[in-house]
Length: 114
Image (cartoon, rainbow, N blue to C red; front, side, top):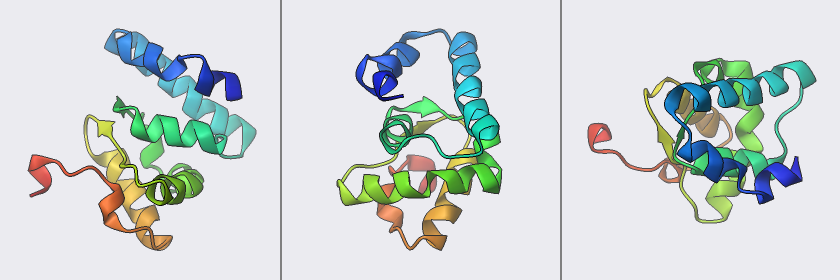
């Protein structure tokens, strides 16, 4: 999994057409479900800061909670979460952040949030 962080995997995802990118992201989330464990911390950080759309499955509370360490580490590093698309996954992650006492400032501000 470290290779996926280091070899430009997330940059590659940003360049793909939306359909293909969504398939890769679904598979990534599927790995979490199959393995019953969170993505490695560095992958969580890259996924949540890469300005990619997260699959709606991430909006399910048990999936969203697997990102709690990533949320905390992103905040600790002074980075912000950048997610594209509908806000369902972001809303679920916000709920986890509240549970984990991670400040809301970790989320990138959008005009529609104002």
